[in-house]
Length: 281
Ligand code: AMP
Image 1 (cartoon, protein in one colour):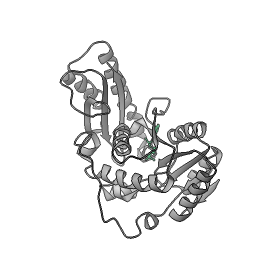
Image 2 (cartoon, rainbow, N blue to C red):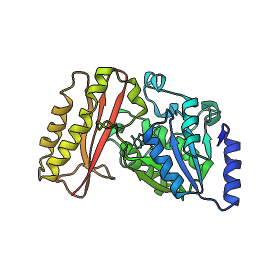
Image 3 (cartoon, helix red, strand yellow):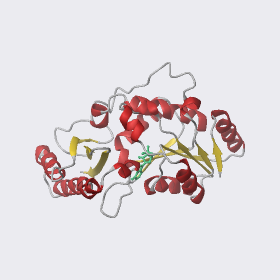
Image 4 (cartoon, rainbow, N blue to C red):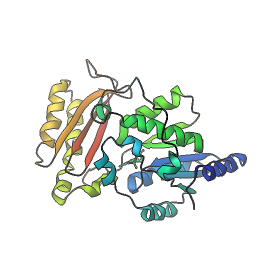
């Protein structure tokens, strides 16, 4: 596996692979890789000639400096995992390399915003759009892999690709979970022991609510109240949001029909966790 640190080297690698008619599968990450990321890598391996994984903790998408500081990092662990999974290139640019002169522009969306994480982390998706646009230009991926754990991000990337005519194909990948249901996340290492014990309540709440919907419950207040009451069994969890919307449009639904997302964000002392379930009605 090749580890690349500069934009020029990354572009050179891509041109070389393109000259050899190779397809490129791209997995953008913020590192501290776990089985969720590995699942994306495995799909990319299966579907492309070459796999590029990026590890970049993008300061632009953190609206809270404490959250950026607390974000776990380990280049060694990430290198070992990528090597073991047969990744071709691990792209690990520095902040200086990605933003040598800072940014003289911002990006924003007018759709799929004002809800979920955009409501409680304003500016986050602007940073995501900016870094992904840069990475898409550098890597020109044939296919790009994103986890449905970050379902709003998938919806946002879908709009980015369509609106800016990127020729990459978006591949949304199902959420990988711990045996007790907790969605794998780099942030889980920041949970205390007792918070870790409570954290599976999030997925339990969502799956129970999904079962209620499947059994015919259509009162959105009843569904949201159920999720709230299950998560509130934890003394450590503070609910950031619980929302029920159309997916991927992320619009409020007068009546539940079509593809629906039930998503929540929950704050613990040093980790804010998000999760969701999709329901087809
Ligand atoms: P992150 O490093 O947290 O920015 O995540 C990088 C990519 O991995 C994103 O597309 C995430 O949605 C995806 N991802 C993170 N956790 C999981 C998971 N548990 N299952 C599947 N994909 C995930």
